[in-house]
Amino acid sequence: MARILVGFAIVYFVLAILLGLHMALIADYRLGVVYAHFIAFGWLSLGLVAALYLIYPELTGGFYAWAHFWLHLIGLPILLIGLMMTELDAFATGHVLAIVGALALLLGALALGANCWVHLPRHPRDSHAHPR
Image (cartoon, rainbow, N blue to C red):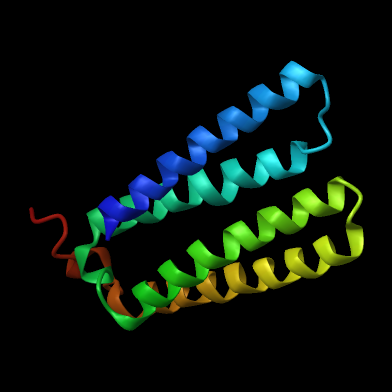
């Protein structure tokens, strides 16, 4: 699962760079908030979760991991499209989409939190990820 998340993180990173380049070339920065969300929720969040899964492989493969995965990967494009629409004069529809996408991301984050709560060791000495 970590490899898949890294792949998606890189896709979002490249898309963010392309969007930033596009905004610079046409000197129109209205989509700056969309760009920031590409970086924060695409590149950084997915990359950090992938790193977490590499450090703690016991987090991968269960219900919570897959719930986070799908909610994040479905919610993020919905959020981004909604934000884009709000910035490009389709505010009402975009606002609804942004809320739906943000709610999916929130549910995904809660699934990630539950996954960590259930599967991570309570004390560092209980961890099998870093044998001494």
